[in-house]
Image 1 (cartoon, helix red, strand yellow):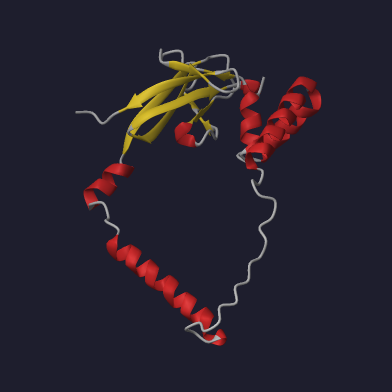
Image 2: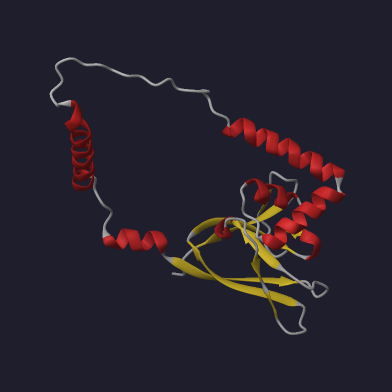
Length: 191
């Protein structure tokens, strides 16, 4: 089943082709439609307001320091002063620390699937958006070179009809929230 589509639909991460695929799947598969509706209702509860309405409060303070017509200017000046103080007092990381935070390490993804007509990669580093892989002539191999930030990443491959498979060459895996499996890799800079 195309469970990844439900999550991508809820998070508004689908391109136009994927939206068409989603609508056709919902239309043709009652169980998929019911699961999608259940998850959307759950998302509504999560996004629901804790408070229905906050009443407006008006305070009439006699003898205030600023005349009525000057209060918006005073509020703006106070806000600007707070912003200036924030930027002057908040410590900034050193330049080399900032560069290290965004440093990316080359990584090659390889999938052997000769019968596939299309292969894509989805993962935490792509925000679960599919990235097309390139077929290596008639070898049956699909490849994708990406620069990834150092750290632990989760991913899987998408092939025809949205079938999702974990990387068969990576033993570290975990179940996802949709009944599938993601491969887990640790990307580190070579010593």
